[in-house]
Length: 215
Image 1 (cartoon, rainbow, N blue to C red):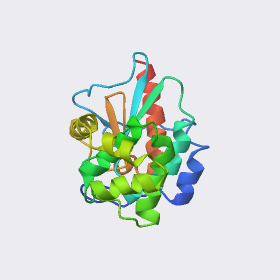
Image 2 (image 1 turned 60 degrees about the horizontal axis):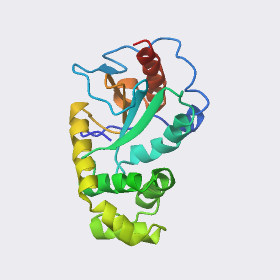
Image 3 (image 1 turned 30 degrees about the vertical axis):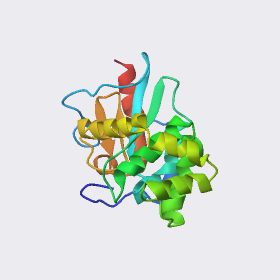
């Protein structure tokens, strides 16, 4: 979802079929300045030496991110060993955005992202649960099987708050215009508007990973 809202072009069928198609090279190489953007200034990456960092910018509040999640999860399972994938929750889209950022980083700190990422999206977009505000988020986490006291401790910790602040800084550094969006190697940025649709986003990311391998 854009800060200037846009309509996600990929259909559910296109997303579901993506898992088997994104590994194939495109017939025509994507163009810088149209299908993806080359950053004027490289952004520092957190990937270990020898790894190519790929970032997804997302928001739990974003319906397009919710729609994109199954295809993204399928893609992550296919990435080459050189790729280091991570997510960054953005400080926009809907309400209570800083708490949603802390929700993500609390799950990450507890090693629960893989298990709870689809649960959070489902609670917000399918079940229409009230996952807003610290008290409701803590109660939701406890109701869904996490240790409520431990989650509260992590969710309200200085470390998680610092990561949320850093996520906002990274969003600005990459000049993220909307979500879902992706970035590669601290050098390139692509979203549904630049690529044309979210199916093509992952195709462009595959291409850029190949470019990053070249150095």
